[in-house]
Amino acid sequence: MNGFDFDEVEADYIQEVPDEVARRYIRNLKPKDRRWPWYVYGRAFFEGLGADFRTIGGKQEMLLGDVVYEVTEFIPCGIERMRSIGRKATDELKAMDSGEGRIEYDEDDEWFGPDVHLITMIGMCLVRCQQIEHYICESFILGISKKQKKKYNTINDLRDGWRKRLSEE
Image (cartoon, rainbow, N blue to C red; front, side, top):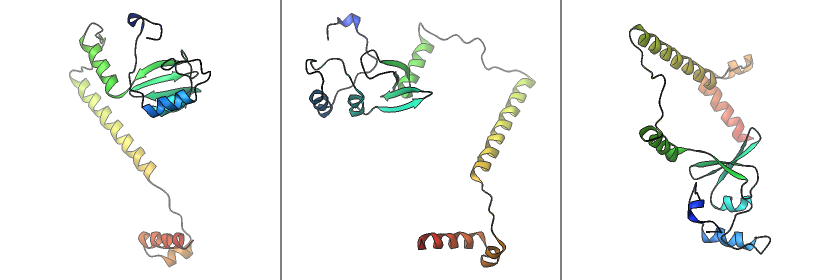
């Protein structure tokens, strides 16, 4: 396996490479002395596999399947696995929670007596604040002139007038 024994190799993600992606990669391979399959160089190969890319905080990330990789360069050893997302992440957490690597929690969320009522009230207040923020984000201030006030009787008349003007332009 590319010069490594199976006990020296670890896989983060296994995916079948579509024939078209492999042909395009082999066609553009430089230098030509590299055989296929071998180490992959370049972003185009991962784009062909359907990877998504983004830059956050000056660091480039690549999402391939359910795994996020940090990319310093599209060369061997330039791509580092950062974290799992989606189903794979939840499966990993379940495995950690039930096996050898079980996570021990120092403090469980258990409240007794009046504390549980206080926590419930705080939660209800938080929900109400988020509702208010949502209403503010969805609202707007309407300012119209006296001439427009005389021209339109209702908000719907005003909206219809704007739509008519926009469709004429």
